[in-house]
Length: 312
Image (tube, rainbow, N blue to C red; front, side, top):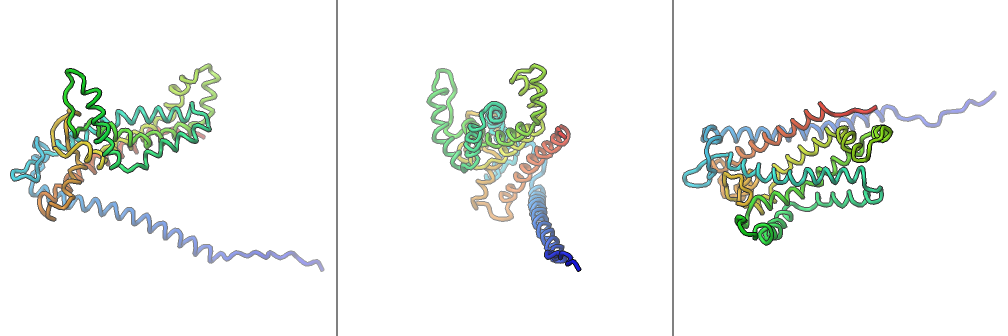
């Protein structure tokens, strides 16, 4: 009689199912905690903002031309802070978007493989520099450099010690790695067949990049742009240190201005008692900032879903 081979390995199916359920429960718990945290933040902003608008009419919040909530005769013109935020963000994006996109194109399409392995981490090192360091870099080096070069010429205006120009320029450098990294990953993921097909039709390298690769990666590139703009809008320490805390309703980059985030830093130092109108302005400004960044992220999500290229 022939001995039949026996299966020596008999997995414990009950234990495997129990372990899988435990892993699913733990992951679900972490996801629930993140959602619960988001809901808690939104509700906190909503309740305190509602309390603020019980004391300050919303039309004053939207139409006043000064922002002095801590003065004896307070004014609550949020557009004063929005103008400072808008100005620094525009300067930063004018620096970061072309610089980051061109760096991404070079890394993906032109740089040799060995050089790419060195350059990409070197660019991403900028993302690890603390923003307060960028702020003092703008204040102590960029501003004096601008004063000694461009603004020392005849018939040029004076550049203040605190100004939005140097803050915006340095903030643009700080968010460049975000644009470069995401755009480079998107461009690099474009199928090689598209490039080879364009070369087979007689296109040059420049024509392939501008006419095939960039349009194919457009959704990811735009997403990196929107994320960079959101980062610029929400930047705190660079504008607090370099742009100053003087609330001016201006679009002049040569003067000091206050952004929404720098005002939050100013009031958060502890001078405003809890429950006071000055304290509640924190949440009114925070809600405004939240709505701006939420709108930008929603637009990014819509654009990516609408124009994303899917390849088989």
